Length: 279
Ligand SMILES: C[S@@+](CC[C@H](N)C(=O)[O-])C[C@H]1O[C@@H](n2cnc3c(N)ncnc32)[C@H](O)[C@@H]1O
Image (cartoon, rainbow, N blue to C red; front, side, top):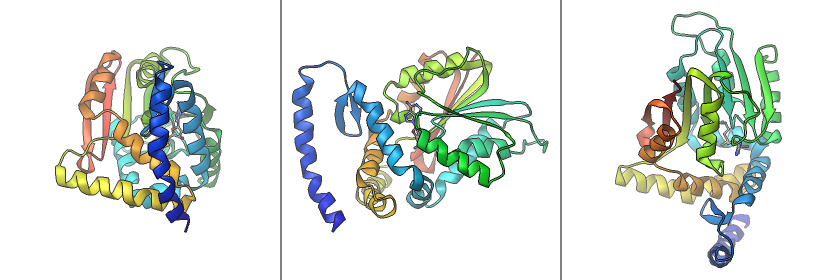
């Protein structure tokens, strides 16, 4: 019944779009929140609400939606970084700590146990709280892990602080992507690496159609059943479509000053890992 109601509610979406388009004439500062156009100052609040709503079920939903494949994508990100001893990482939009835990548990290719530091940084305290609980359950509290709440567009860290910067499935939720990237550049040490794991563009037409059908028809239903939240997962699917494709995002990173900017597609381009270095 709830799902039928949700489907009915979707009809109001077109009306909201029309009203927002009219409102747009009176203001210049609009951005997208999924397929909705919203005032720039409202996006962060809306995104915050999404992640507060889903924080408790976030990890279960990730497993369900991706059939567990998100774990492999995150493993690949850390393998690509291949962190050695004494590396300091800033994991922005770090949420419930998936990237941070992999980073701390990673054994470098030489087989050494490493002493590393990670700062998990996220705008949503509810997500960080889930992460802290998980860290405790995994006995990671003694490791060098700190949790800081704040906005990726204004990092409260000195210039040239970290050896590496990661942002996984976070940047498309931010209002000003260029600002996020320029902040990452500022806080990285010279020689430091930027790594971004994000949903991207599936270019093969048949696969893209299948992927779209799965995304738009199944994921919001799963969101309603598992997390009791249709709209947050509808936003998730739409926000993926609004994010720049592989080449356009690569250009954004290069424009910020990063060198050797490159990307690797995973699972037919469903997601991509972009990386670059500060010199
Ligand atoms: C999809 S989750 C990704 C969490 C984690 N990185 C992972 O891969 O599982 C996106 C995260 O981005 C955070 N976020 C959204 N906008 C942000 C911003 N402007 N600054 C920092 N974090 C933000 C959300 O609170 C949320 O925890």
